[in-house]
Amino acid sequence: MKRFITTILVLAISISMFTGCATQAKETEAATTKVDAVDATVADTIATEATSAASTEKLHIVFVTPLIAHPVWMISKEGFDAAAAEFAFTGDWVGPSVVDANEMIKQIEVAIAEKADGIITQGINPQAMVPVLEKAEKAGIPVVVVNSDIPDAPRLAYLGTDPVNLGSMGGEAIIEKLNGKEPKVAYMCAMLDYEIGQNMIQGYRDVLSKQTGYEEMTIQESQADMLTAVQKWQDIFNTYPDTNVAISVAGESGAACAQVVKEMGLEDQVIIMAIDDTQETIDGIKEGVIFGTMTQNFYRKGYQASQWILDYIKNGTKPAEMLNDSGTMVVTIENVETYATDMKNPDTWK
Image (cartoon, rainbow, N blue to C red; front, side, top):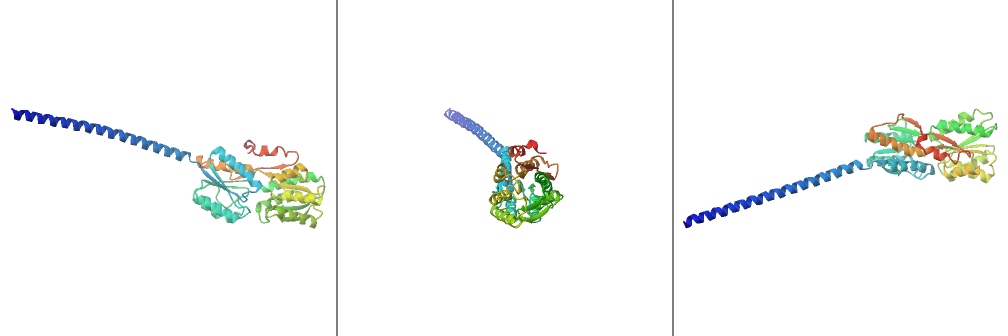
């Protein structure tokens, strides 16, 4: 009897222990399942956040300018910065302090190495810049060229002033201002081998040379330097005292000419036609020393070039034309107060 009772007790204890272990196992399994579920949720959250971060990461566009702090190019930077703010991309503004094609090429190389999403630059030396733009194409980086083209290089589009048209428009305005006087013309460009400047001069020449008594006094270069431009204009008026038309196709040259004309008392003799809308040039027009300036739409070159790159990256959309005229305007005392607003309004762009 005792042996039977002992057997029953042992069996009861065993069943209890088995039941307890089974219950504990179920609890452990449930806890493990909950942990696995939490881990899966966390993993999903991390993956979602990573995907979201990748999708909202800002694109990176680099503008390689020929003159990083020149007043004219700062207008282009204004358009570039406005586009960056509106379209939410990161924009880098880089370039040399003096015109240096080799330095520009180095900056483009850096942009390629940094895997920029797009590049904007000027063809300051078209032949020398072809290889680096070919390298950008191989890297899958779209390039928009502004202000002066690089015809033999791969690029998304060109956006710049039609230089011959600019000169022709300026020439017509000068003829009207001369009112029958024979044009004795001196020209100044940034560099004598700067193709776009020479094309602008040719536009002026095509129109003015048809006038009776036209005489081309000289062509000089300012080297994109204000002091050099002042010295050159002094030499011109001393060497060619009959000069009655001074045409500048370099941004600083018009204001430099105005300074010299005032110093030499030639305000009533010399008609000054400048280029671009630096503050000094605009002040000269308001003062009456500078007759007019041919404004290139540098704001558009920064803004719309960026827009084209973004459209291409996001939608595969290319500009309708490869070669695009950014537009120009003759600014005189009649429209000096209103032209800037007009040129920065995208609704006025074709």
